Image 1: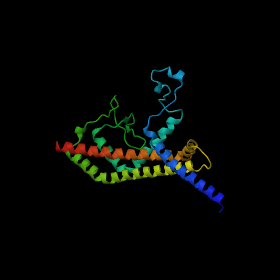
Image 2: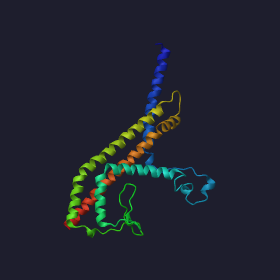
Image 3: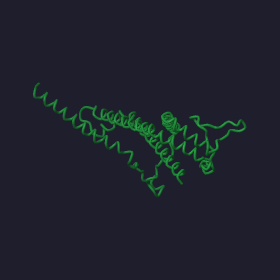
Image 4: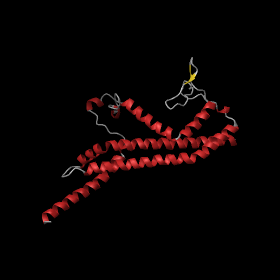
Amino acid sequence: MSSAEEVAEFSQWADNAQAVDQAHRVIGEIAREADKPVAVDIDPDRSRETATTGFARMRTDWRPGEGAEISGILQQASGIIHRMFPDAYLLMNELWELVRNPVVIMPSGEIKTDIFGWPEWEKLPSGAYVEDYTRLTAREKEDFLLRITTGLLEWEQKASTTWLEAMLAKGRWEEAMATGFISPTGRVTVEERTQRGRAYAAEDRYHAIFRAAVSRSAEQLVRSLERLGQRLKDSLTA
């Protein structure tokens, strides 16, 4: 290999190494973007319409067509949680059946159900459920407490699985972002690499967000069941 070829090869290696270092830095900054407030450039004329310029162009609803898409994604995430924790939802609905009143469709007398087949329950005008926990006997409380206590072992493991899936999805997104960032050859600015990386990894990023949301839902479900178990325990020892 000639000296010129060696210099060219070393230069290419140095560029790739620099691109890798830049990719790690940029990906770290992008991963933290969700925790930062969104900054919007405000046109001077538009900013005069409101005393608080930060609200001048703030949207309060989804764009046309986005609402239905978001609802579908939320329903998919909720469906995953229902399929992963069927025994938990069965337990909760058995408890609610004792303390709540189902919504009845008149004149057929059929009980109204949600998209997952569980009964819908009567609510007050405020939106709170009509509930009477004095209907629960001590024996019923003990039964629910025991089922929650024994179920937590499996539920916590399932929640940990969703967290692992979220971490793997995040890792896949970071890898895709790095691949898109490093792929351009020649003298390319960091901004151009970042935009290519974003475009290349867009699908993986949304998947990582989705899996993180599922993991958070699973974690919150387990916490809610833990709190319910504690309240039942407290009511038995009061």
